Length: 58
Image 1 (cartoon, rainbow, N blue to C red):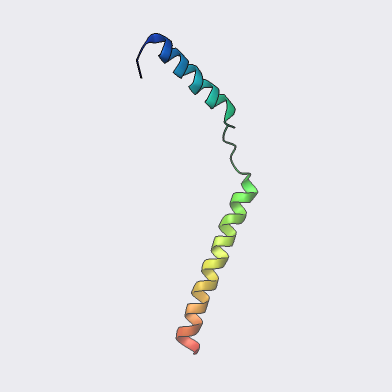
Image 2 (spheres, helix red, strand yellow; image 1 turned 30 degrees about the vertical axis):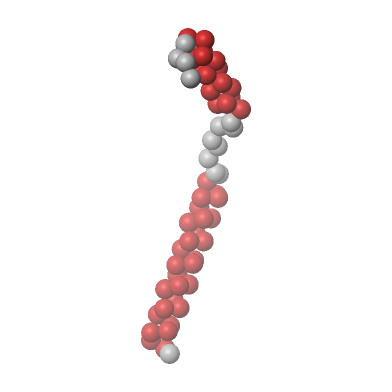
């Protein structure tokens, strides 16, 4: 590819078009993040509880 000013302007215009087409990042709502952490805690509690039960009561 030749690095002429015309080609560079064309490439720059293409990049700007691509950036405009891509949707901007929108973060998840707070309740989604809180629910995710709660579910992670539930799964960890279940795994640790199962391990504790298997070690002590089986």
